[in-house]
Image (tube, rainbow over all chains, first blue to last red; front, side):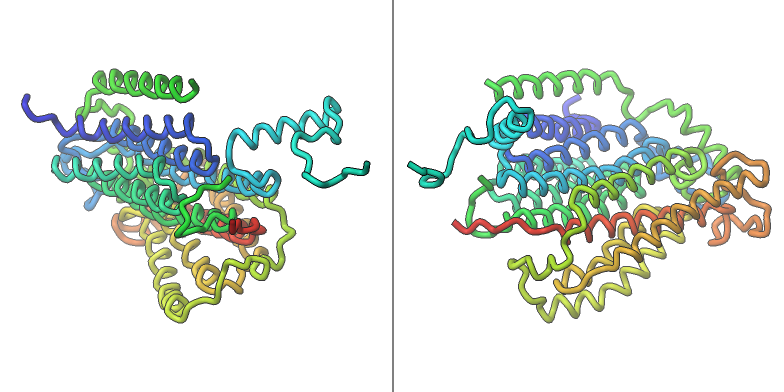
Length: 146
Length: 86
Length: 240
């Protein structure tokens, strides 16, 4: 076998998308870009699912006459599942975007580290561990009543 | 067939890398739209026309619209300056 | 350190998936469930598009749950972003006046997009397409004026009414099937709707009505999402 079959190309695409998306979710600092990586991961998973119902000589699962005339058809069940998953995916994406918008309003940042620091500080203040006066970055020149 | 599939998969993976590596977020959104579009082509080549239509309408159309609009709301709509949000 | 461990994890994931992929019989799946559905669907459901039969007849409750998830997502977006942005178009300084070409083009495109959306919904049981795809196109068609003319808005009440009616209609058709002694949400023939000839628009019993309800619901849902996100208060633009 000198030339790779078509399945090698398909699996490379699906697994490549999943791995790129997973690496992006883990490594990227920006929250918005993390959402983009999540979308990539989702796309790779749906491609892998469709590949599981693929037949080499199959045709699309659409009948033109009343009965399938002995023709091999692709599996309709994974196609229906992926169709549902794509539509749900855009709903989840919108929900994540709404959360990102709120985070930006509250913390004025999209960087994971900064958001985490400020959020932990807020939690500490709210639970009474740290007093609100000892904020870690007081404004220079403000509140200096000698 | 295999050459078309290889070409589309190459474009898809290259723009998936571009989503993570491009410094400009608008360009990253556009690259993710390209990923969805080539994915729709792959679905059509795999004889799944329903999924291809859904991916083309949702992934390449509505999702990119949603992301671009959120980018504008986030105040990151900067075409020239190559700075991410800080 | 974190990057190295992330790379190691991703590489391991790739290796595991590759091992899994070599075990799968590519191109010769056994398709136990799929074959049965392919055999039975033309007689039991009567659709040309088998994917539509799977979505609405064999997995109808799954689709109901999916609509519920979409509704929950849209409701949560509205909850998170709040309703306190009545003058967002004025508040957003980055939007300039609409250009002549974009506004005229959107006027020209909108009726065509609506026709295409409804065509895809109505012929979803015969050709590729259906409620989900057509619903998305309808959502984009109704959102197009908002995109090209920054001042205009879509009425939230209208969207809510369409969404509620479509969702109630979906469940009503499901309950209607129970009146005839069939399981919940099963598409059925031989009532006053008639059986229909295979391949014609009025075929497959109540399945086109179910798909129409799905299409309107998805379209209203996604249009509501788009409007909510576009009306969100804009963050201050950083010009440093």
